[in-house]
Every structure is written in C-alpha cells, then in structure tokens.
Picture 1 (cartoon, rainbow, N blue to C red):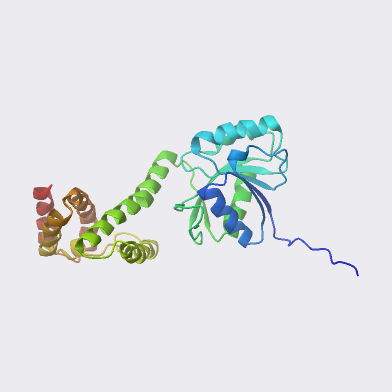
Picture 2 (cartoon, rainbow, N blue to C red; picture 1 turned 90 degrees about the vertical axis):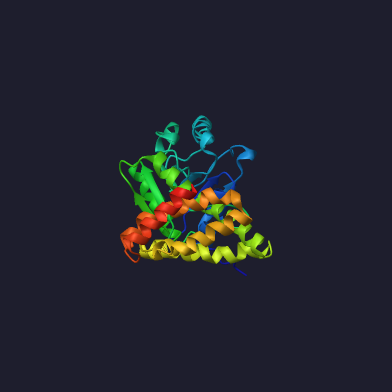
Length: 282
C-alpha cells in the first residue's frame, strides 16, 4: 500500500522562536494554531546547531537581545534567506544589528499585549504590533501579525521609551489597580477567591469601551456624572476600610476630571466641586 505524502499547506511558514518564556510560548502556541511550523527553544538550552526557518523570533529579556544576536552571528546558524525579529518593546531593530548581513533583514516586532503567564496565553486577536526595521523583515513580520489576527503598525519617529512606558502604565498599572480594588472588595465582604473573577469582566468591558469609543467617551462613573456626594462616600469608606488606597483613588479621580469636562454630562460647578474635594483630601 502506497502511503500518501503529507503536503505542507501553501500558507504555512517556518518559524523559529528562541526564548520559551511568557511571550515566546504564547506566540508559538498561537502560530501553531494557524498551521505554521514552529520550533520553540528555551534560551537555557543555548543555541541550536542549526536553524531551519523563514523567520527567527528572539523572545528573550531586553538585556539579552543583542547578546543573542551576536552569538547567533558568531555561530552562523541563521539562514541567509531568513529574517530575524525581536519582541522587546523598549528596543528598536538595532538591537539585532549584529545579524545584518548574516540574514535577509532585522526588525522589532512588539505585540502590545499583556503576557502574564506561559501556561495561559492571552488572546492576540485585534492586538496591535509595532514594526520597525529593515523593509524585508518588516514585511515578513507584518505577515506573521496578519496571520495571528493582529494589527501591524509602523510608527516613524516613535519615541520607543515613551511607547513602552505607556504600555507599562496601562497594562501593569491596571493589574495593580485591580489588585487594590480586589482587596477593597474583600474588606467589603466579597470572598477573596471571588474578587478577581468579578473584576476581570469589568476590566474587559473597560477595554472594549476604550477600543470602540475612544476618549473621552470611555469614561464612566461618578466623576463623569459630577456626583460630589458619591465621591465623598467613596472616600469615607476607603479611609475606614483601606486607607492606604486613598492616594491612589484621589490620583485616579483627578485624572478623570479632564475627560469628564470634555464629555460635558456634569455641570462645571459640580466638576469644580470635585476638584476642590480632591485637593482638600490630598
């Protein structure tokens, strides 16, 4: 009996990912789900003897990206036809400069997604990917992003550090803010295991509002309504149950005021009263 030869799908790419942490593992899982041929190698195992891939993704810590590029160049393991990209947000394509001439091009391919666990990957659908670097590498990285259902963006003249700080402020700040909110729920009587489950969908609805409505319309709550009495009650409860969260609440409320003024649901008098309340409590 003649065995049928397995055909490789026409749209399948060969991807080598170096670094099996949160980002590398998540990308490998997502790409395999699309039919891509993916090799994932943990950095602790060191470089392989050879790489067979169309695109090499370096998914290691920022401080190690250039060292990995230098080591790959010295080992001569990146195919000349391949491109190399890294996923660090704070580094541009020049972190992979040692590989120029040894492959078809280098680029940054940073997914603006919060990767918190190698065991449970976040959804990448509709997430944005920042691309920057050599045209050939950017072109192939864009194809990878499209394959994952993501939005690829080239942002000429971008301040990479400001970009990375903004991502960290929102992603890491939201997680920390939710942790404080969860503690307040617990002190208010919600079981500790239930609090994160309650806040997760709330955060998701905020994310959906931000993406679909933009600013200032994504803002909700007592500041938008100009509810001075409601804010006083919040602050009184915080002082009683979680006083260490008061400065955070005040700062968050102050950041909401310009959005509330732009929306115009509340009177200027009420918003001025909120500003005065926040200043007195600071």
